[in-house]
Image 1 (cartoon, rainbow, N blue to C red):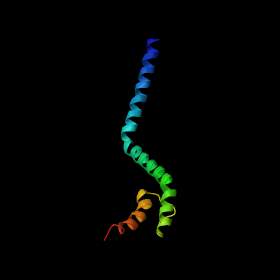
Image 2: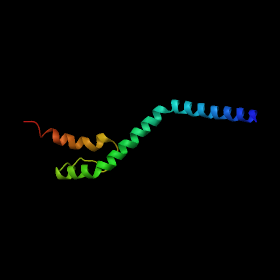
Image 3: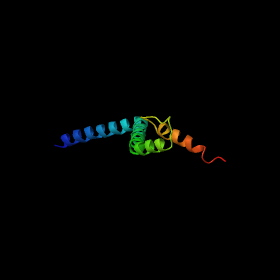
Image 4: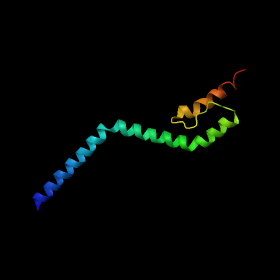
Length: 86
């Protein structure tokens, strides 16, 4: 009985150490993927509003399917840069 508990404890320890090492080694990929997922969610959320703004201000170079925040916001921000200059 004690031998079985010892074997189970060793197996669980090996699994826990393996999982923690995998997470430690792969942390940059996990973080990068989380940022990419968040960026995609933001673009999906704001895309209809940004397309409407681009159409209202006759911004012709607005991309139909932006993949990054820069692609989504740069054409609009560049169009607005000229508004504040005297």
